[in-house]
Length: 356
Image 1: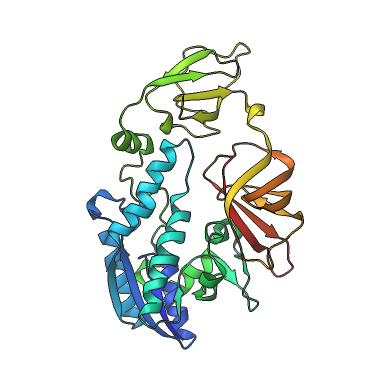
Image 2: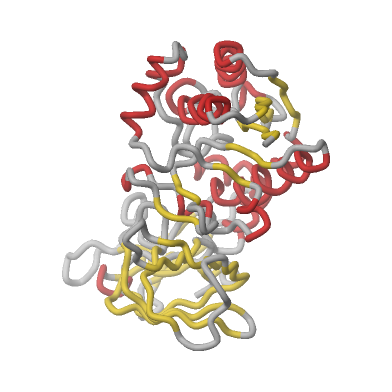
């Protein structure tokens, strides 16, 4: 095939591109310039999408021996990922920007342009597997598995995707990079949010949305503190609440909900975080025919979260899940991903965005 290898500048995407060449594909490398001002994005071990990453990607392409280009997608990234991130927090939800980047940038904008240019598929360094049956499965390296953030992809997008690393552990990928002479073999993984340079999400949101003082209340409605903006909180948060009144029983309190309409944050005991039912919207179903009856499966409710047995039902306006055991810290805006246990690796059935 003629394939486009998305090269972030990290070890995973470099080895994925090299494996695509070894498999006999005609490979072209591309790095996505996503920052309007690269100096404002994270650098070093906490980086992603920086000038440093662009240079690392170019050097890797030179070693592999493939053509290499940089595509400027900064405006599209800002609109579809950064602006969406801010709007979701303003609405009292907790978004996953990496999931949105996969959905809107890497497997929409990039794939659409690649197909228009005559490429057959896009290769990435995600740790996930696509079997011969076309089904998306977890990576063999479960701690590094990224099937959760890929579950938003449609059937058409998966059919034009290649994930060469799903059958390898991260340690094996690094060892292979060293054997191939790739300088990124020991480069630390990127993490956190690439477009928040100092890692201060609360400060970033305050600069975008401005100060919006309001009340922190308990489950009875009594005011127990104040905040500078409800957008700075997320369900399950314990630290940084700055409460004026301790709980009567002296126990820690957690954020239970955020209500933008009244600009209030509700706090309470840990057990009040337990959720047994989840509603979600915009379902994407790729693991087989869309079920018309409730389905027994397993669900994951946040990146790297625990897997829980559940009954999932697709409805006219979304998805409902009944959890077999309560889960704490479920936040609107995150994804619920349904899996089917399988001897060849857990199969992604579908996903949806949690609303309640």
